[in-house]
Length: 261
Ligand SMILES: Nc1ncnc2c1ncn2[C@@H]1O[C@H](COP(=O)(O)OP(=O)(O)OP(=O)(O)O)[C@@H](O)[C@H]1O
Image: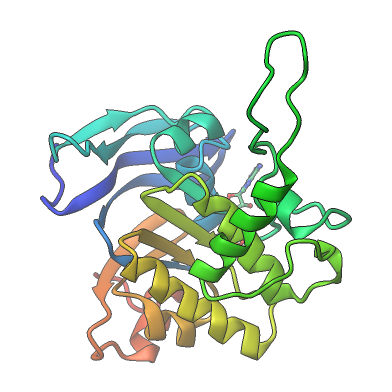
């Protein structure tokens, strides 16, 4: 397939229609290994649809997805027909509404559905959840992304930035290759937002590839290596964030005031 050699993930001719509504039309995009790619676009441009497809939450109407095979280094087609398949392919998504359980503590949220069990008796006797390991590994997972949060704290009592960090720590438990962050700073204080941006840089430094959706262009300029612009369901341009992008120009691509790539 026709993608860059350094691509870790590629989508080819992907469309998503809801009846007569065209949410995405014929989008082809390669995501480079270890880059931070921002996807921007006006309301309704198709950003959420794009990441829902990559997360296996909704099926594409048409098109193919490819992921780099770690052994051969070549892109191989993947089927993203469920969230489980996306995770198995190495793609983890932190959605804006993070589906954290606010009444549960931090460790429970970091491990939700993947709780480590105590060694010992199996078979007819139910193995018990290893709380001590959950707490220890929660501390470690959060520490790795630069946050110090008590694993026994009730999630709903924490700040938006801390909650976002918990959602990211949960996504990282499976050691994904690609992490998608959907508006991670939308409901976070200015200080918390800066920590999330630092976290994106740390994810990149640790070898992850990051896809970052945001409405905040200043954040895009700060952390993105590349910017993909969606408009009315189409990918209208891809820009290297090399310090020369003019804000007005970017907005022009988003609104349609500028028509070519
Ligand atoms: N479940 C659905 N049923 C019908 N139309 C939908 C559905 N989900 C999205 N759409 C439509 O698809 C288009 C793209 O929507 P999408 O949510 O992907 O845009 P977006 O770029 O994420 O917008 P926003 O920034 O407002 O979140 C819009 O016209 C939207 O109304």
